[in-house]
Length: 349
Image (cartoon, rainbow, N blue to C red):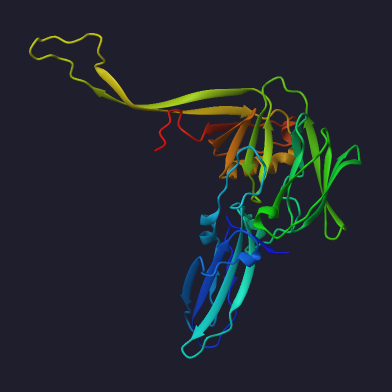
């Protein structure tokens, strides 16, 4: 199993000690495919001098890695070639008179992050790529769970404790296989079990079905804390808005010869008119166990909204969220403000 690096948080490499070291060279390889596709030339080469007669140094690599992701979503749940990366860090020590032994470290990189309380170089080793213990699914949709294919072995969807859809996980070693979106083959399931560790351990999630939908349902898909796509349903009232920005200048209408002007002309002229549409979505009632999902939505850098068969790139406008609990609020629902991630008037050059 590869060491997983969530690259929105730092990843530190502390080199082995080397007597009389003057500097260490880091050759960092960032690539997709199988591990054997390691490029002949390093993506980055860094030299770091030792200080104060130390015999080792520390490198931080994730800031360099993040430039190489290609995150996209068109309505189809796949681990595209650029959403998962291999990282190989080759470190060689040098002294004034000798070259030390190269030490190579390999990481599997997802575009996620760790928390402050996880401490440095935290390694996530759970099979499912969802942190909340409960998820919602529209009763006309099939349940989906993202898993790390290097850890997960079997995914079982259940209804009333009985397995109704089972899936074995295979991994061919390619980065486009590492995150897999396992989909139930039947509707209306209420639990999903992700089995791992040679069948001895299980990660379990509760599934709440949404079946009361007076309003049109908007499905929001976002890149979560663990670098996987995750769904949230907003099935209550929504409201759309248009925000317009414009510049104005005063025109000179006077015909200085005839000493007249056209009264149908615009004296105050608008120009550079640009519009951006936004939408306010309401979740309806959700489980308290889903609070982490809404936290990760606000912290996500990639968000989309599905309305029917159309997928829209979106941005979350809200900068804060008040967590709700059953004890304090009884019934929990959230209102989130989104803006479409493009201008209404096409200005793409």
